[in-house]
Image (cartoon, rainbow, N blue to C red; front, side, top):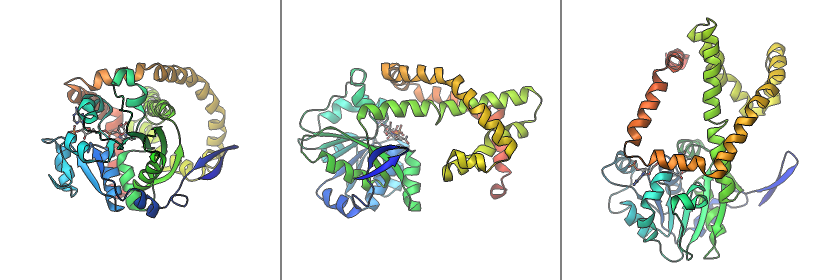
Length: 348
Ligand SMILES: NC(=O)c1ccc[n+]([C@@H]2O[C@H](COP(=O)([O-])OP(=O)(O)OC[C@H]3O[C@@H](n4cnc5c(N)ncnc54)[C@H](OP(=O)(O)O)[C@@H]3O)[C@@H](O)[C@H]2O)c1
């Protein structure tokens, strides 16, 4: 492990310098890694591991577009592609990458097929931490581990192909074999993590649920809409409102933050923009702080996961979701966005 100073706090991290891909291959050489679920994370992790020389099989329900996708990606029915239950039986590492609601539904079938000494792997602390809601309580005679990429499964794959990686947290919840940590790190390196940092199942799920509801998606979508609506109310054109709200952020400013941090972005914009942004940042921080406090409380109390399981387990879940997404797609703001994107030089 390397010790890195994160703003004055020293933390341990693992990169391929500390735990090489060769070592990961050695640790996993006798293992069959069964990826259960070929949705978003499943393909990214399965393909990266397969390319890294790990023995990978996929478990995916048949009669689903995801099953066909696994075939298109080179998995072969009856050889490396099976129904979920059969893959669970064959795997010595069982990567439970069904949707979190799907994990609840399939748990009795998966649990019945775990063998002594298997590693049960998650990419989210959800099922284990909220066991009172999910009923996912693993048997004592398996390792229970987590590697949680901090990015979409799509970028787990595209970053791997680009030669970069997505950072992941890792945790061991139960070490039956005495090899749980070594297995976890090997799997984290094999899926192509940029660097690995330690967490617990609980800290992973609390921070992840907060982040995606907050700055990463929920808060971002909310504040964008608020600003766009305000500008439109005051007579600004859709093109102007969208450019000042979304396009400039995604095409320019956030890239500068990614490259060198917030202060560098502030020092590389106009002095007018800089003064105003520095003055207004604390006002926004203080305005949203109570909303974040409410969010974190709802996460830790289990209210957020209860809602996820209720809504996502409904039989008409996909239709209702589609209706919500269509409303966003058809809103003026995002139609304006489509027009703006079509005008980017590379899209013309
Ligand atoms: N999405 C991400 O980028 C991301 C990032 C970090 C961590 N994670 C975690 O990774 C795990 C997988 O997430 P995901 O986003 O990849 O999930 P997802 O895209 O929603 O994938 C769902 C998978 O589960 C299957 N499934 C769902 N319900 C099922 C059921 N009742 N019976 C059988 N199969 C069912 C789906 O099959 P069908 O296609 O046939 O419906 C699909 O293969 C979760 O724990 C998630 O929190 C995800």
